Image (cartoon, rainbow, N blue to C red):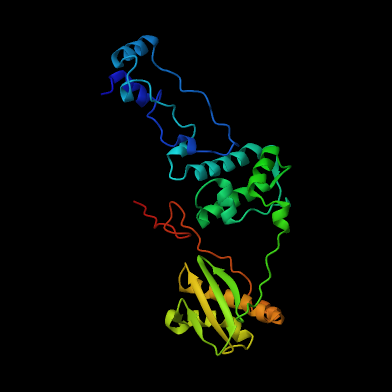
Length: 305
């Protein structure tokens, strides 16, 4: 059993229970956290009395040995402490340097790492798409500062692409030995890998016929739009693997993949597909719900009494 004085010291924050993974938390060194230990609120006589009750060489929670200081950051107690600490530090850096460096709309923004590379740079196992977008938005906010402070430049060196990465060009899409052209399309949360090969016009989506997979006619029309605008309907077979999102997002993701694959077969179709808007990635996503509101825009009904 813990003595009353030892329990009181734990509750007041002078000492805390052992922490299992405190060393795993590695916050970004932008905001300098206080390194000072918590001040002891008890007198020497109290400490002496407590040690006499618990024993000079006691083990476990009956003595002062085996305890550590509280974590330096409150983010330790969250589900994803490294990510949350990074968001807090980015906000703190912008508030800290904004008085000395004015935001500029003409400031050059670096090219940030992709989702997988940024996940490794942050030091977490996985990052959701929404988390990745939030980090990029915070970095873009810092990039508007002009002149850019030195600590911000050091931070950008972690998350921005290097000159070598910028010089790497994507491999050109080619038709393989079996006459297939592979392309990837995305829309909202849907992602599709599409194979296009010359044939009689069959469409297979995740192993099912296109008309069977998409129940709505507008989804099937959206999927076949690149073939219709190029007058190639019935001349190519489509085989797609799609995941994520709903039927509308999946249909438009496959449509984008078909348009890219058609350009691999016939590069001259690019201008036609461009005018029809088939090779432009639609970046629109669902707007998030706001706190204190019914939805993204809708408010709660106002009641006078």
